[in-house]
Length: 89
Image (cartoon, rainbow, N blue to C red; front, side, top):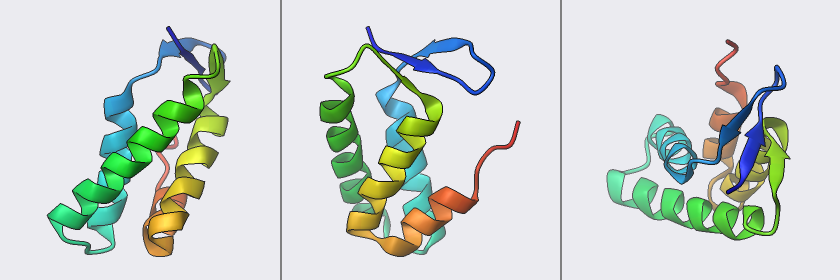
């Protein structure tokens, strides 16, 4: 089991669905079609899953940076949208 260390120090189990959903939402926010958004979100999710499988835990910041970098490979606008629309709670 892989844990994500959140900003306030608590840990949460890694959830691949959250990675997919955030990448998908970023793609939709830059007006990509649903099919293209799904394809990109699937690629991002798979890349992150391979990267994170080699670790026991990562910080939420490391995960954020990795998703941002992977998104930039596919669509720079979606990466920017992901980076600038953080949940600040």
